[in-house]
Image 1 (cartoon, rainbow, N blue to C red):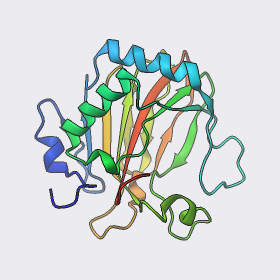
Image 2: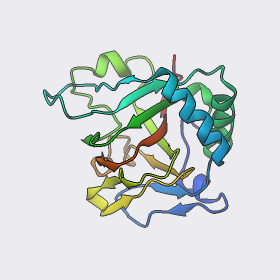
Image 3: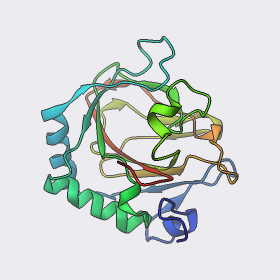
Image 4: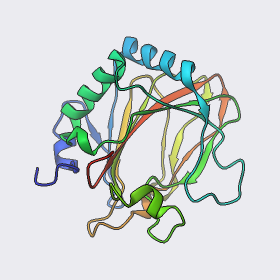
Length: 210
């Protein structure tokens, strides 16, 4: 790859068992059983031990916009190192371009309303979050458990609702071909209706992170 902060739909789709979402509006793949159950359990334990209320960039005044809890996962933990290794092998992206692996926990009634992972260049927090590492390129999210009810991730623009299943990876390109943010990546982490939902998210940047 020319750009170390980039992957491609072709690179991802070439892996066995990877499904490409058939939409011209978005570059997105699904990979069931990307992480084994024992690794999922270890990551859940790490999230439980260090979770805190989630926050948002460019706050819009809605205190209920993101109600989950968050954890920045320690890069020194064996489970985190193994997850990072698998992601590097899968994406082909230079790890230096990756943000800290983040875990999220949703209990009953918690959600993250419709949002994009890319940052608005005209937003109040652009300088704070993007002045060094640039825009987000790819997002890779992995569900760590089956959820009893609710907790799907809905991409309304493409009519796609992804149900949480342990170990399943969802990955998408946050930008259009011209490099601008793709509004079709707008997605909603829907409310959990029963049980708990755990996920981890890995974001990559145009430039090295740090």
